[in-house]
Length: 310
Image (cartoon, rainbow, N blue to C red; front, side, top):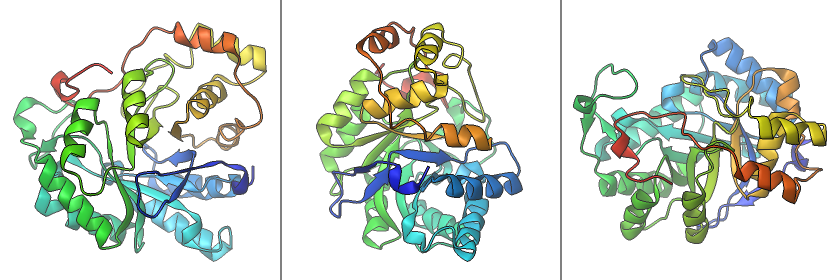
């Protein structure tokens, strides 16, 4: 698919109205950096222009190398053709560490700016090597106002075009919006047919915050579940449309007005995941999806991090 065929969403809460491709390519992976670089190059050839990384993924450097090579090969004419998202990790989630963390990210990728920089989780974690989920003793108090002011400063300095959050509940967003000078453009959350987050989606829509779904197919690199791919209702819908379950899930998200970050290093699936724009789900499909039992896949710390069920 040509990159020009992938629809874009305008990020409403930004002063400069940036456009974000509705499907992004995820780089959270247990694969080697060589695999990541090759996969990103293949994704660019397939039409992807939105790439999602994070400090914790270990994929910033190979993503940067792939961008440099794509420019060299003429796969893209300019870095401006790409939309790059990265994220602030929990151990840098302190006001004085935000700017240095983003500078390090940019050095890793050899870029002058990212398009979107997100607070990865609404928690601050003390330095150290911690397992997931984080134990209580790893957590420090999260100065959301101080951290957000530092994020705003990053945008003012032109190191990122937009700022946003990830894994923020309605309550945490409400708190953030009460003092933000620049509101978050995006909230990236776990979202798929088995964890639909209707209340949070509606809240974000009301506030002009674009929702990006991670684990849109119900799996991730460091955790995972076959709940989406094995779901009986989704398999029935896929069969009726002669599509894959992945395509049904991504089409459902697209019809909800949600953007998605999907990861596959398999060339065929990579292309299939973009083939969702020329068909539609039916009323009957929606009724089936509404019946799917809900369960969250991933948690990073004590349950009260969520402070509500969405």
